Image (cartoon, rainbow, N blue to C red; front, side):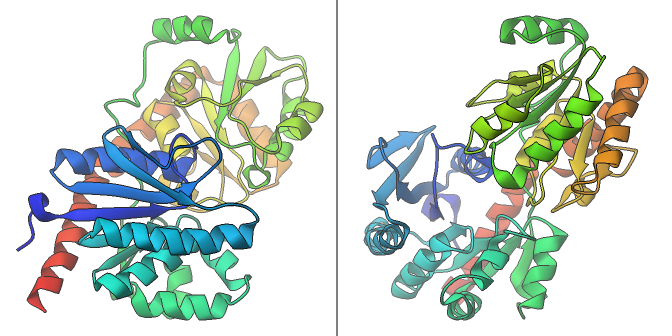
Length: 382
């Protein structure tokens, strides 16, 4: 039987800290919790400009392999150099995050080492993992190889689960293990502390709505800014965008006086604790870590109805959903929250309770450990 002391796992991901995104942040939290259970971990990822080949981040060894531009060369080098690094590490199990290059690499290493492979698609729908795979060169061949060599697919939303089923992947090979949030860190603060945090972050008084994430096209921020410019006229209200990305210049050119760009932040906790509401206007998502974190901090959330939003939010009870791009619906929900402080408190409380019950990090980690044991013990039986 495998035990935590003999369990060694290599996580394969496109990028990792200090490059910050939802997948990277979730993996960091999961790795920290797995290490506390005595599991030996390493991360294999691409090496981006300015980052060292190796470092230990929050206790987890991070191996970055040579991946120079242009993209075709980067993918080839990631496959070759990553393969030799994984073979050198000799893990008992591989866990790939995303169905593209990380899974291609992990499959090659799995076949050599003859070890189990777990694969986690990060996003469904338009521009999701399967969408991208089906629209890329040799996508069908890569998908066939994926289906033949993956032991278990982790699904974080019903959308992703249904997409895998549509590709002919059996339900027995899919496990629902959603992302989790550390509710001992992401928690609500009192009104007095909230005001102190606002002063610290140099944020204005009044109704304050937060977006936290990458300023990328799929996040729907041009739509949000267009609606906000209309909503905020004549109101004591501010929209805070905590993040950076390729859309930043374009969005700043669109923004009115009531929009504050705070740039990249390694940890948005204080921003959650300073705000009155959270908004996620994305046109595509998996299971948003930012949404879970905001709700855990007691924020009433408005989210576009994509990805796992409908699984996290019960409409008008634990939050609000709007159709992507529907400006009238978004405007109505913003006005509703602006005019009703009691509603904000009630929705925020219910949302926090729901996240604390259904999405705690320890629940995610326990499910992963059970899966790893199952696969390793099954391998030993054979």
